[in-house]
Image (cartoon, rainbow, N blue to C red; front, side):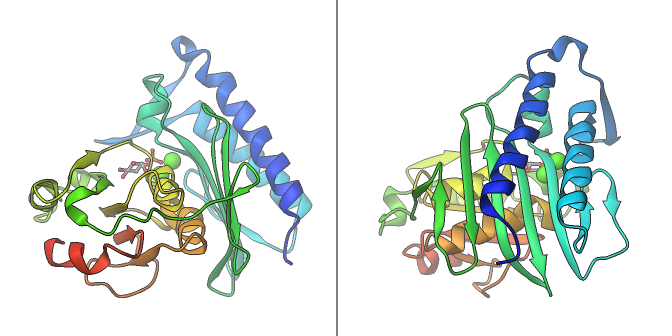
Length: 254
Ligand code: IPD
Ligand code: CA
Ligand code: CA
């Protein structure tokens, strides 16, 4: 295999401890705006710097792409990292934020880990080896009826004031489902589908670092990962993740 799962878990949990250090001292947290609706904090930067330094030392053969520092030279085989997914939630002292680390080899995601430090949940998967949470195998829910399902989404697209800003889609789907959630961390949302806590998730205008790790974990747990037309694959600008039983029912509403 390309990596040591044990070493990766140790490194990502250490990154979680760094994040929690800032999380437990929010009154002194430096927060800046990257754009009109995008925040970045010193915690995002510190966690990413730790991951880049550590992963580049342990695996010099792989490049690095982090949300805050951008892309290193070698992008053929690379780590794809969102140091804190759910920064806005983080700054408000909420539980729902995560650290997302994926390894892409020759264009394919082969390892993914999403760590939620506030509840100490570590999700991971290697291609073809199943999906795990805290060392136990996980799988998608058995929900067969969209009308009884719980779905999650996000509104990244509001940032771009796009014509299609997800609000009408949300209303269509909300009227056909029992529960709707907007947790605030797309990486974590996708892992909740993998873990059967949510039956489907969709969002537009994300980036690969938001979804790469979660998408592998979800696929290894039996989820479908498609675009809004049902084409299989990881499409950050239009991602739909379902428990596999609801795909045909939800597609007409997308
Ligand atoms: C955000 C979260 C959120 C999603 C936003 C993303 P960030 O990530 O994933 O759930 O709706 O579009 O930008 O910016 O906190 O890393
Ligand atoms: Ca993110
Ligand atoms: Ca982020």
